[in-house]
Length: 291
Image (tube, rainbow, N blue to C red; front, side, top):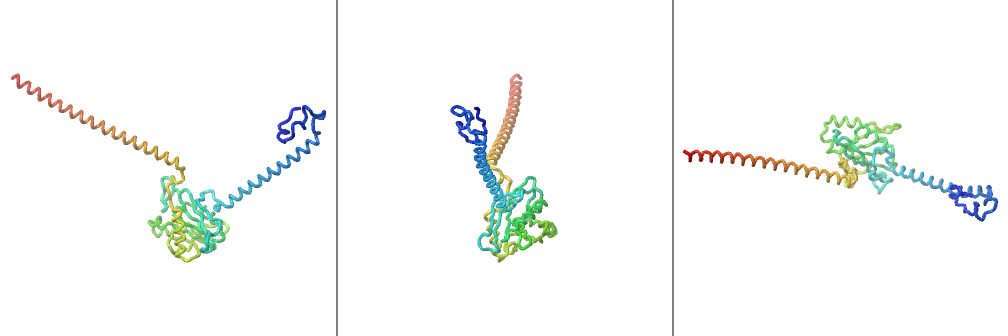
């Protein structure tokens, strides 16, 4: 009797399935085989279902632990719950996104990476990410260094150095552009502030302490615009830099060779001119002697 792959996979001993030493019935009767197959298959099915459920729970947990739930930002660091005793359950995340504008919203030839912080309070209202998505899609995110929601209002802290060149009209225009951007079901009033020095209201705490807290984040994460190479694997950057150095060296050698060749030709021309003068002098002497 030829054993089918399905029967082998089920783990049924070959002797029970028939063949040499088996009875005329060819091993277990059909109903016996069916019961064994059902029992083993059920155990395997339960294990498969358990594995699938565990994998689904794992995927769900990964999504829930990613506070951004946004396709546009990379999470560099994230505090999922209040840390310490500051403000009203204050904690923060650091996000990164490519931007094509500098801090003053002037166009860039090549994208740069913007690192900024999201300041959360005790309710960790993730609808703030909807607002950040909209600000990003409107091309207004580049000046932002900190952004946070507190008690139904949004506070944006812009880089003071980046917007220093703006006129009062430009600043007012930016504030107006971001004001009112909020969750579609509950628009938030928006306040825009400059710099991370004391005086910001992004956290419900003493103004000086707020400035110290934001400066701490700035110190740890060096917020702001960075070269796009910060996101490229080191080996790729190193190879690119090596290729560039080689190209520069070859160009320098080519220039040196060209300059050397030019100098040689100049010297040869000078030698030719000197030889012509000598021939002229010798010819003059020869004529004088003949006379």
